[in-house]
Length: 317
Image (cartoon, rainbow, N blue to C red; front, top):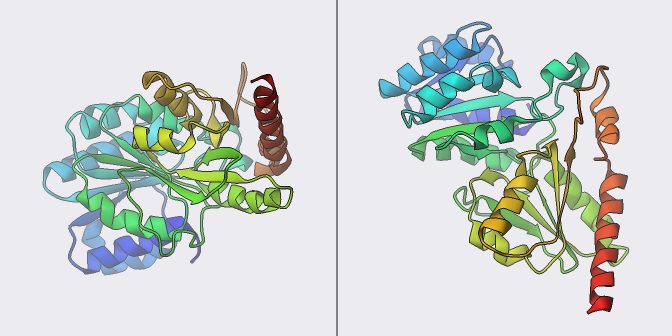
C-alpha cells in the first residue's frame, strides 16, 4: 500500500510485533490493513464508533494506565468534535499519545465543506503542550512511529493522501528542529509543508530553467527552532504555501516568529481564504485549489511577483 499514512501504520504494526505497548483507538474509521491487525492483535485495537470525544477520553485513560494510545480517525472530526477532551485531558494532563487526523486540508472535498480540515493547525496551535507534525513522505512517516514513543507530550499528526515517496531517504530528520532545507536557492524562499512540499520541489526545478533559484523549506513541525529558521531565510523574499486557512497557519506562525524576534521579513502568504462563508458547493481538490489561488500557476506567478519586488527594492537602494 502506498502513501505516508500506510507507511506509518505499517511501522506501528511492526512496533506492536516488537512488544511495544501500543493500542489503536479507532473512530469507526480505519485502513484496510487494520483488518489483519484486528485479527492478530484484538487486544490492541478498540473501535468506539462515531464518538470522537469518547475516543480521546478512552485514549487518555489508556495513557494514564501506561499504554501508548493512537487515536485514529477521519478529518476534521477527530479534532473538531473532541477539542475539549484534547485540551483538558491530553494536553492538560501532559499525556503521551498520538491524535491522527487523516484527510487534512481539502483532502475529502467530495463531501463538501463539512469535511474540510483547513483550520486544524490554527486550532491546535492555541492549545499549549501539543506538537503538530505534517508528514511529508513515507520515510518521515515511518520515523514518526518511533519518535512518537519518545515524546512526553501529545502529538497531533496530520496526514493527507497525496503525501508519499521517499524524498527524505538518506536524510536525518530532527523533529525538534521542525524543518528541513530540501533545495538550496538564492532568489526566494518557499516555506511549505505536506504534499505541497513535494509539488513545489518539482516547480523549483522548472523555475531553475528560467534562472529562478528557490530555497525550498519543509516546515513539517510546530513548534520549530525559530532562530535557526530565521537565519536561513531572513535575507530573502519569503512565500509560505499551505493547504490551510491563512489565519493561524504556518504563514501566520512565521510572521509571529519574525515579529517576536524583532526581525524584519518580507513574507507573502498563500493559503485558503474562505472570506465570509464556507463554499456552498462540492467539487474536486483541483477545483478548490484554483478557487483559492493555490495552483501551480498561482504559485509561479507569486514567486515572479516577489522577485520583481526584490528587484525594485534593490533599484531604490
